[in-house]
Image 1 (cartoon, rainbow, N blue to C red):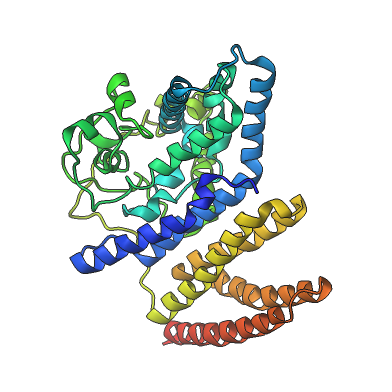
Image 2: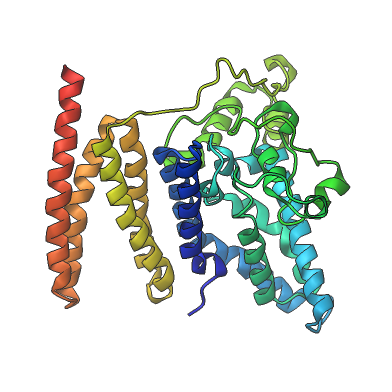
Length: 410
C-alpha cells in the first residue's frame, strides 16, 4: 500500500493538537475556537481529497521529465540526500514566495492564511488548488536526476516539518536554530497581516533562503493573524474560491485587456491608475479590530463536533484505503465528505440553506450506507449503525432546529 507520510502522520497531528489544547486549558490561553478549528481541518480534508486527483498530475509530470530528460544519473549517497533536501526546500521557498507575489497564485495559497488564530490546526488548513500553480517550481529537480520517489518523500517530510511551527506556545529558540531553521517565531511573522510582516519569511524548513533573498523579518510586536480582507466564513469550499471571486469582480472593472493581464500576474492588491492604483496594506487598529465570530449554543457545538468526529474517522479510513477504490468511487466519496465538512462549517453561520442541506445529509447518508451494505452483502452490523446514526442525528438536529426557529420568531 503506497501511502504518503502526511496521511500516515494524521494520528500524530491530532495527538499534538490534543496536547496543545490541554496546555491551553491549563495556562488559560485562548488559542482555539471551535468553528475556526473545524474550518481549518475542513480545508485540510478538502485539500487531501483534491490531492488524490491533482497530485497525480504533478508527480506524473515530474516522473516523465525524470525518465526522459534527466541530465545526470545520480547515485544515492549522503551528498545526494543533502542536495535533494536543499533543492526541495529552495524550490518550496520560490513557489511559496510567488504564491504571495502573484495574484493568480495567491488564490491557491490564501486559504492557509485565512484563519485569525494561530495554532496547530492552522497547519492543516491547506488549499485544494495550490499544487496547480506551484508544482512546476520543483520540476528542475527532475532534470538534475533526482529519483521521483525520493523527491516525493523529501517533499512530504518538508511539509511535515512545517506542522510544529504553527504554534504560539513555543517562543524564540536558541540563536543558532533561529539563524538556520524556520521556527514558530519566524512563521508567526509570516502569518501576520501587519504591514511590516506582509510577504516575509517564506521558508519551508530553512530560514536561510529568506536571509539570502531579502525577505526575512524578525518577530517584534505580536502579529495580528489573518488576511487583509477577512473571509468571514467557515465554509471550506468558499474559502478555496473566494479570492478568485474577488478577482472576477476586479477584472470586470478593469477596462483594458493589457491591464487585466497585468492584474492577474501582479501582486495582490494591484489596480491600474484609473482605478486608484495599487491598494496599500491597511494598518491594524487593535482598538477596532474584531475577529469573525458566530456565537452558537452548546447543543449545536456538540452536535457539529459529533458529526465532525465521524467525518474525520471516515475520511481517515478512506485516505488509508483509497487505492482500493475506482476513480468514480473516489469522486463520489470525496463529494459526500465535502458536503459534510461544508455543512459543519455553515451550521455555525446559521444560514437557512444549511439546515435544509443538513436534513438531506443525515437522512440520505445512512440510507445510502444500508443500500450499499445490502447490495454488497456487507456485515449486518452496518444496517444497525445506519439506523442508530439516523435516529440520533434526526432527533438531535430536530431539537436544535426547533430551538433556533423559536429564537428567530421570539
